[in-house]
Length: 276
Image (tube, rainbow, N blue to C red):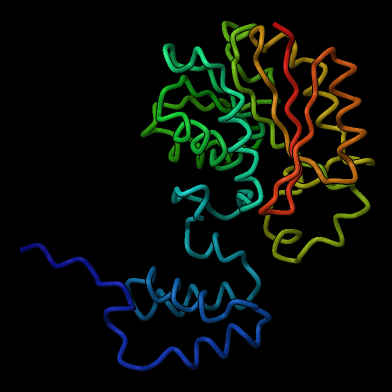
């Protein structure tokens, strides 16, 4: 006879969460009450709760401990060693969906997500387009590719392992309507200033933007015009103080650039469009 599935700890517990909240707060978790509720709601047994709490207290990102992150209304799987999607990047998703050509209402847009990590950006863009799109994603990191494949399988997204555009099928050249590239943009000598959970548990390649933070964007800008359809757009995130230099890189690739600042998040995006 099959056994009933374990119930979440929130349904098992008989004691208040005071002790767990205190442990999390002592470990430096600013939102200790919220995190405790998430841990209780996710753990299926007391042993699993103890293991998850131990990892969080040791500094692991909460999303790695839970196994998922909430992003743009989606629950996205994330695992150890995979970049955690940031809430500010939801602004990039909004701008990408807005950049989709009006023709996508009739024909599915071709959407490409470079440096895809968990696949969160591509999944959210496709969802914002009502699921109407061909989605392709790529990342150099095998762990990220495995994670993205799980997240995008239900949407029919295809995920490739490799270096930027070299990972993509050649038949996409000149056909891409929306190209998101959430490239790393932290200058190398500023990595030490990042929170420890990013420095210690996320891949350096997903954080390190080179000496000036623009190394990966230069490479993307150099090839993007050949992959974009006429009127197609490349969208990327950067910091506010880097946005001018980033825009000049994209303009040098003969793309028309718009800089946007979010009113809700500390987020800056660039939309670089191939002239039609």
